[in-house]
Image 1 (cartoon, rainbow, N blue to C red):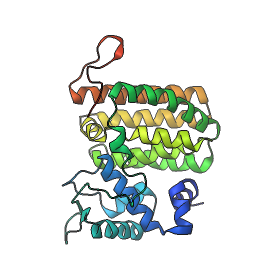
Image 2 (tube, helix red, strand yellow; image 1 turned 60 degrees about the horizontal axis):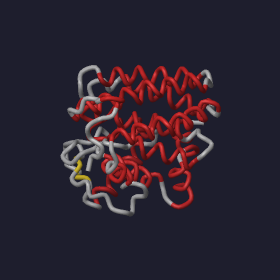
Image 3 (cartoon, rainbow, N blue to C red; image 1 turned 60 degrees about the vertical axis):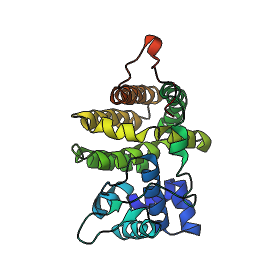
Image 4 (cartoon, rainbow, N blue to C red; image 1 turned 180 degrees about the vertical axis):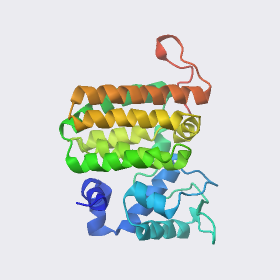
Length: 258
């Protein structure tokens, strides 16, 4: 099974696309989600077609078609002889689940961090026990691609999202998998700033390598421990870019982000 076939088989939105939509529509939805979550911001250049195709594990033709859909919606500007640029972040309701990231941002950082720890431990532990070789192959290739993005935060965040979602999808409970996927999208603008710091991507890449090793062993406890380290790192770096040091008991001053 090819990596593109693997994604079609394991991504619910792509499985639905086989029946109701073509892959370019799903690519448009994925890019819209990246805009809605703040990974791609207004004025940003998108990664190249080749890089997006590799990150999303689809053809370059599908990426081109997805970009054309979003350009027609006014979200992207396709510039002759230059990179495609994000023109607007007003993502419409036609793109399913594309607004959840903004909704989750209403909650406080500590509450979201606690929710991630509580729910993600169950999801990734279950994923470890149900891990299959095709998912591992996908994750290994993602890790290789991530190593080439140490100076490219935007491209790393695209790969980072696909890496996490591929793991969450192995959970037997799709409700929990969707919940932790929404929590993952919390405060992506701050995450963008955090991974732009020197050495930040390399540290996240090392976390991902530890997660992959645990998953390869189908080791539930080791996978949960590796994710705990990774989630804690995300929490601490988000605090730092917000200028909010932890207070007593690990709670921050900011209870809600607005």
